[in-house]
Image 1 (tube, rainbow over the protein chains, first blue to last red):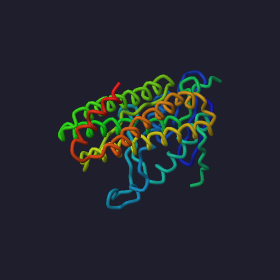
Image 2: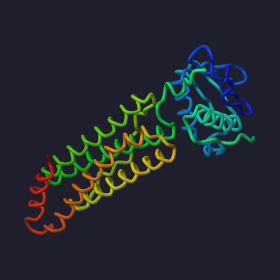
Image 3: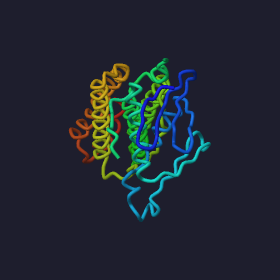
Image 4: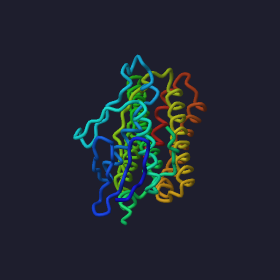
Length: 106
Length: 172
């Protein structure tokens, strides 16, 4: 497995035998094909970070993330969300498909 | 090690995001022109209504062109949500002036994507947008000519009827 990107809480690896990416969420590893990686990127891009900090909108400071047509469910803290956004952006930069690289420093 | 990502996607992800925004913009333009067609029908500008029905279809075609491009390059096209369509205009001149403003915004947005694609050496996206750049020249020119014609004709007396009849010249 080739490590593409590692952040404080998570990491993304590319399989050497299958056309898959392995996203290590700590408590479980999720296997995603490229389209699912794009869908994950779309989901993290859609998160409005400023609203997560608004205690009236988000009382508990948590965010629910579903993946692969609701096959996986994650409950993330704000810190983990920010970490995941960086991880996903940087993974695409590591793949050579993005110019954006966000330094990881939580 | 296979480059799975590159095998699956032929453009930069930032270009994909910008093209998804453009899909949204074209869908918004299509809905806006439909609202303009509705206003024209209700106010007796039947030829202008035809013009806007046609424009609305064209904008949807533009949207679908980008949508299919994103499918072809292995991207993730997003079906757009369209809200905030204005249905109120004070005159036929305002309708066409709003249409011109809309076209200018679309042109600037496309130029911005070309600029960003060029910066990231995304030649595929840059080349794809060549057609849109030329199409926008035509779109802007058409609406600009109609606005000029309205100003020249004036809206007094039979002016409104003459304006509506004359719009037929721009319906292919």
